[in-house]
Image (cartoon, rainbow over all chains, first blue to last red; front, side, top):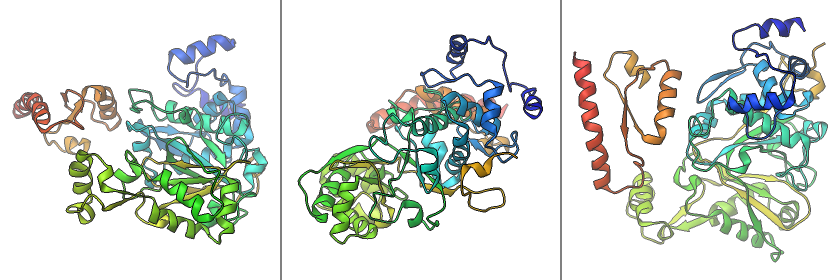
Length: 373
Length: 72
């Protein structure tokens, strides 16, 4: 306990409080340290158990979280993970996710402070998903699995408490979103007819990865009629092509995410479509005529922002949802049911994928490899 | 803006009302807690050109005061 006690002597590192669940929750509510739900008091004992799965110096920041650029040390991240209700073995993924979203291409500053309702979605691939019991099937986006619920919540609490994403002060989201409570899933690799996201991005299948996406909530795509690949993809394309979309308005780097339910994925793959083929179809068909946008969005927005394409274009000119087929992200998720989902993004953000690695750079075969000897 | 301010250039950031607290907080984060903030009514986006000119009319007196202060 002595290493932790040393760290806790630092200014502001700890506070004394009565050993009372309600009193501690009252205190954290007063200080604005929570998401509105009860938190697990981050006592020294609980924080130390969390840090058992940390293979680096507890006081060394792994990142600075905007907009406050607070130092995300393992100690602070562990406190937020305890508050969220995480098991200690989740901790390596929490550190990895924070590192990924603090990478420059993600633009966490924008994602945190914007009036848009986006929040980081954490997609887990590889063996760690099963090891930690991260739900990839029925209700994966919803409640029920401790791993999904608490890993996502730990991230949100860290973004709030360390990053300063306080509603109306650092987090200017006009109305927020339920995904800001927690947003963590594992891709359903077993049910996917295609290569998983991390393999598509060049990682070996046996690597465990997190991919962070600056994302809106999922929007359902119901198709109980189509029996062909083209049919399913047409329905998806029609749902994806919308006005009022950051992916369209903030186009350059936008990576709209399409989540295939396993039944839809099976139909599309059975039609001979690879992931790349599906992306090409979506790119070509998820386009809206210029005339669908408001006059102001056309004259002050699209014509000015993309003059090469739209300066003199007629109302029939097509406005794409992504700048190329490769910009579409595809994953497979969920259980039985003829649904897929569209997850629009913040647009001004690029997804980042990071592999779970040990200090020596080797891929971590298990979270147990992070345990302190 | 914080870089410019640190170099001694007369600098200000324009904030609409709801973003004032964020502006002040970020000025502190970037090491320029006294960075002048020019306050205009919200919103600036999605308004007519006349309304934009109205916002400028609110900003200009504040800018003039700032520059006078700077000249002293």
